[in-house]
Amino acid sequence: MSGPAAGTAVAATTTDVVCLGESMVTFLPSQPGRLADVPSFGRGIGGAESNVACALAAAGHRAAWVGRVGADGFGDHLVETIASYGVDTSAVRRDPVRPTGIYFRTATDRGTDTHEVAYYRAGSAASAMSPANVPYEELFAGRVLHLSGITAALSGDCLALLRELTAARPGRPLVSFDVNHRPHLWRGGDADASVLLELARRCDLVFVGEDEAEEAWGIVGAEAIRAAVPEPAVLVVKRGSAGATVFASGLRPGPRSSIAGGAGDAAGARSSNTGGAEDAEAASPDTVTHVPALRVDVVAAVGAGDAFAAGFLSATLRGLPVRDRARHGHLMAAAVLTVPGDLTDPPARDHADRLVALDDDAWGRLRLGPGWTAADRASEEVRTP
Image 1 (cartoon, rainbow, N blue to C red):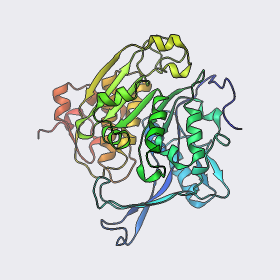
Image 2 (cartoon, rainbow, N blue to C red):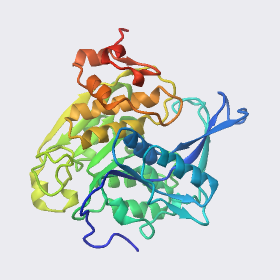
Image 3 (tube, rainbow, N blue to C red):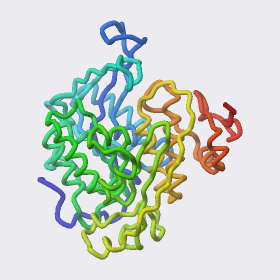
Image 4 (spheres, rainbow, N blue to C red):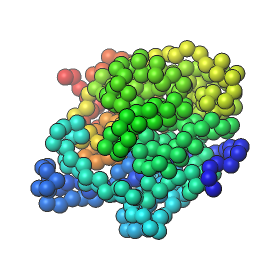
């Protein structure tokens, strides 16, 4: 099979979000220090798209992860661990020749000069994903298909696959795309910048960090990023401790135009889904919403971007207002920031909803530390500086 069959469409969805990408076994250091000095490592899992799937499943959504792993023990561990979060892994493929990717990292934050990551993913099973060997029926079976720029960097076949999945076609689910610029994965110089921009412009909901947009595209500021990526119905510019700025354009009701079933939902499928001029003309000007970040006592700054995307997608699936979507993203990120690994249980939905409903002043006073997700009342989270 070289690509999705003509007219491939979703007849009835039983899955909320399908996430496609590479997941790897990650080895976490037993103590701080250089990789050369760390005496032992604990085993975990890591992968942007599988992180999103796990977080969504833990939050009560029907999530599936589609990937390719080796026919080895590490592949077994990945599939079993991801499935333990409640994620559907039935469409994962096993490669009889290529291995499952692994990596080692230091305990320091990614943003510091002392942080080290050693990847062993070249020639991995996931890098062999292509338009010829993925299960399109499963990929298009959800309300949302979530992708990231990491997959595009793995191989030429993986890039071809992302181009297939983001191509305009009737019945395409809402396509969510996290730019996830990883310079060390690319070997083509500036080619990565143009590829990531191309893919982002073909999607419906896009997440991009203000810092990575500057690094990859030389674009500074949220407004300039929106000017460079005008097509998605929703563009989320993550600004670190400054919060997130969301650009959303409304659409008239139409086929699959609203993920939550409401007329004019800003996360509805863009004209790229149908290719119709009528839909393109229906797009209204952006509304711009800035949502401040929370103050968090950070334990480890790993996996926060994936958690933010999961929180935003969760609230999108529920049809919540844009501000609340971003606030849920911040809360999901705060849950991960206050634990050592990439994954953790999110706050209970009613707990998160109470925090999201706080007025701006109370939201600004929140400070979240380890264990905050277990609190029963929103008032327990409000601490003065």
